[in-house]
Image (cartoon, rainbow, N blue to C red; front, side, top):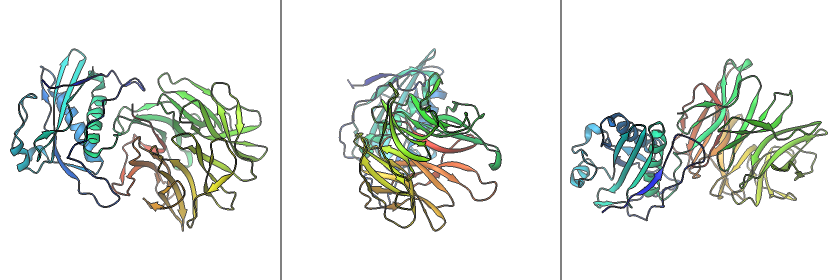
Length: 440
């Protein structure tokens, strides 16, 4: 009798879901390096509809899984028209010879049942050439409204079993949605699934909003608003859309906020008396601690995953560069030494890299470097690329790209950390300042 892990999944609500157990190490594996990777051929025949009325959702879930995997650039789906075998019963033995004949290295099968608004999805992943299953099957239960969530979770599990890395499909992105001409552009906060689905607006367009940043648990968002006429940092609850001003000191401006890894405090830039420094604020008490004290501009702070250090940008050397210091403040070390200006540094969730924006010779780049500044690599180049954010597994970077000219528009793009698979991110209209949530 085959063992399934049962997880209860409801309608898309931030932060309420558990995660599947980790997959066992298996022989079928994509080894991800910085070189060119030949995408792994895989097959996802339509999941079996096990109850009346479940045909469409079964097909939708299997198509979503295929889209998630194809979108990574690491996998290549073998289209259904090339299949010489089909899966009509989830429990029947797999005819591996039929899938070998079409060169499928991985096979994903599944079954879907619907009862009222209740949905159950189960799946298995096979190494076709070895003729074995990768790990144990999993079963997800929830509501029909949450079918996309289940599909993303299946894709995450498949991705993890084949690559050995965590997935990133069951995640969301908060960003600044933009509409209208460049000289009168309306901006409001929006949140969506990583692939552009389930769009929700969090603010109206009555005032300028900038730099939204997810909390470590994905249930809150920090951002900067100009609704009072000057920048102030707000914190917003994603579920209720209730918000409150976080920094409202008289005579100060606050901006570029970022949560600490434990979510209990915020680091941000504060301009007071004409000087801009970094401050840490305890969210519960509102108590502030000054972290830098220089005549330069210190901004765009980001914590290391363990919370021990902060990376930030500063012009203390005469040009915009990247520095690292202790999370408690003190002496900072410059880590950027290439030609040009560096800004908007963000620490990878893996802790091994820092992503940044670089401007040099009239071109903008998204790049990565080691935390000591070594091994700098530029991943993109365009008229204007800026504001990187990391996927939950540290494999993909999303950023803002703006086109040239008076009517230039901003949109979201993503790129693999190796510089491969550069592509636009689906949004409803223009977009900028993305921030990726953790896995949900």
